[in-house]
Image 1 (cartoon, rainbow, N blue to C red):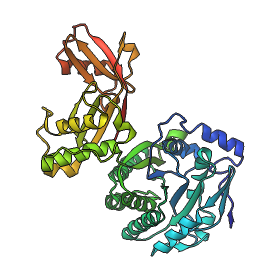
Image 2 (image 1 turned 30 degrees about the horizontal axis):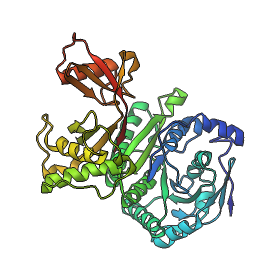
Image 3 (image 1 turned 90 degrees about the horizontal axis):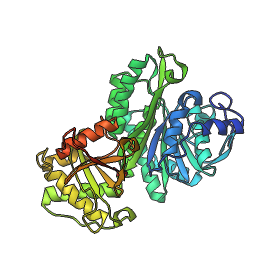
Image 4 (image 1 turned 45 degrees about the horizontal axis):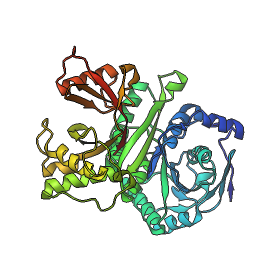
Length: 435
């Protein structure tokens, strides 16, 4: 079966050259690519939601196959439907359904049914495809449309999808296609959407269902989002990140009745951050210092490292080294993770009952370089070292609440006990942040 595009010329240009040009203006070719398990992406007309789709798609390392789940806007077809064979066309070419994976999902699921009617005039999956084709023309995908069912069924569908992926040992990315609040004033939409986004970032599908119902959040793709979170956790996801949020009012200028759009990526914890977590848990529980089972390439070099621990979004410990003091980054992480957990003088030592509430990030530093003036600094891009004699204060880049270079330098002075009028030397460095 060939599924023709049904919203080309409406939601996005029907001309391949115009479509490519539009997408080109909405993606970030310089974005750092990350390994992701899944993502939430909106599906309105590109003029409204395209910048959010472009931002979130730009961040991912592509896999060969995508599973794309969306809501049923048309009321046609089976309520929980999957297509396992055929080709979908867009102005950028044909996209083949991954029949092997689709059939395995269908065989594994007790809820999904083979059906093409639900997909015939449904736009929520179609509008994702050109963005994917722009980056990788030869992708395959599996389309799934979810209408009404219970939250438990949506969660079970997610687990069944994960089981099928594992059975085939396939690398896939799962997309939940969803807009957020529909046709409410900007302030109301943002307030409600923040509640739904918070639940998704916590990877808590039960809380998402609860908030959608209790707060009357008109998020059309809450069901695919629940299935995505359920599947992603089965596949090893431990964290999520909001890439971009905006509303239709940001395009139209009319904030009286907007639709919200959120782009979210869901990821597994990086091996470097996982090492920090394993170190803290082993030391706090058993008093033992673990040894890494395997060294990733990033762990083998030498560098200064800072380990930050957060609890419920608040700092719980942060200790690090300006420059390498160990044989490799792995040993630097282990030493600083323990220090962050039990030796940060601002906090009491981490207790065993706290461990389940902790989040970790690890910053690996480049070698500091001297700068002549603060004009060469950038609080988002560069960390800062302020030096006066033997006293040195360091601040990492891109920290919440630190929005100027002057503030960066003031904090460094305070850390090192350097008075405001004392002459200083300035150094800058960059970091790679692992979560």
